[in-house]
Image (cartoon, rainbow, N blue to C red; front, side, top):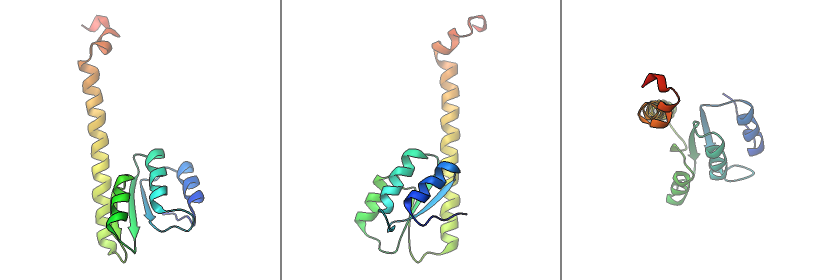
Length: 122
């Protein structure tokens, strides 16, 4: 587990090391957490991104969902609840990627373009 005191450092850390999960406070010192969420969504789509807030609102929740947050939790939070959320979200994301890879393989087998690459196998 690593922490970053600002967004620039958080982005640098994520570029240097692939993380499975990011816990993002919605109120960061240099930008809004939803802006970091947007950046991480584009750069690291496989990462589970959870927004944490001490000041919940419908607007913040909606903005988080629009910026592709995988989860949203309010402070103070129960650690067991947070760990359960992380486990559930990482499993869902892993299963979605496995399903996508299976669909790609199935499409390769059913698409004539791929068959023509090996005409002796017809």
